[in-house]
Picture 1 (tube, rainbow, N blue to C red):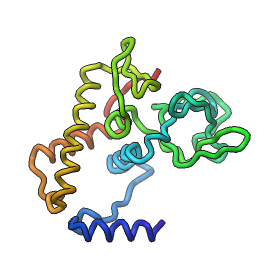
Picture 2: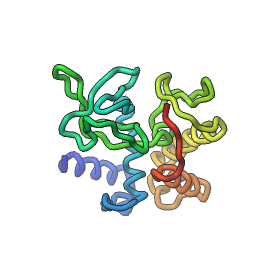
Picture 3: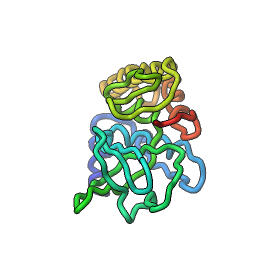
Picture 4: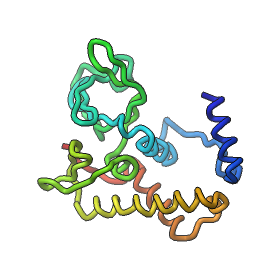
Amino acid sequence: MSEAKRQLLELLSQAGFPEETMVEMGFDQNDDDPRLDMALSLLCVGLYRNVCVHKEKRKVLTTESKAALIHKTSVNCSNLQVTLPYPMFVFGEKIRTRAVSCKQMPMVFPIHIQLFGSKKVEWVDNMVRIDNWMNFEMDPHQAALIVTLRAVLQDLLFRVSENSEEANALEERYQNLIDVVKDLCVFSAVCLSVV
């Protein structure tokens, strides 16, 4: 893993990204840390196909509403009824034995999925529906605004990819965008009801 990290950092450096954009950051996992919330939300970019929704005890639904279980070694595993703040997770590994089990499961927020993972967001039966299978209650106007942010984020990504030096000197509108996205990614940002 450390070799892959080293190679990635070397590639970014060769592409012209400033060293200060690649400084290692620590997280405080014992207290609210917005940087950790942001890192967890960005997992939705790379692991979107590995999203699952907790239903009861160990049961989860993966994409396309396929049933699976939380792996017995997971800190999220319980044979008791559990009430979670948000029942959405991304998992790093799916194990197929007699039953399909999910491991390495950090919790994510519906807004994280809207911002960084979903392909389709629509308003159906007074609910926001993501990719035809995840439903939650949210104001449709707010959902539309969040989806609109994706296009601007995409624009920023292209700009910085074309001119990596711009990463340290963003235009004010892009810095404002990043600040809004950081605020939205904090777990306490919005309270939604997942159905």
